[in-house]
Length: 68
Image (cartoon, rainbow, N blue to C red; front, side, top):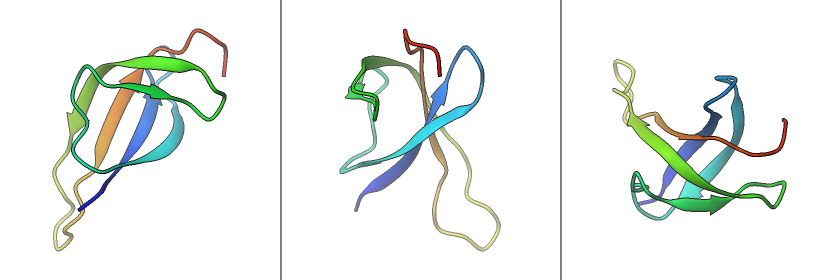
């Protein structure tokens, strides 16, 4: 079962993009953003699902070198 995570910018707190992973991302995961930049996760946050929902929110926090 795949996991859809929101990639978040550590500096601004704003979401950058959504990304699909085949497994739960590890805290040291490296990934390419849509801009082509290679980033490493600062942290991975797994939230609680909303009442009556099955999907758990997952956030991968990264610090991109480029602005925006």
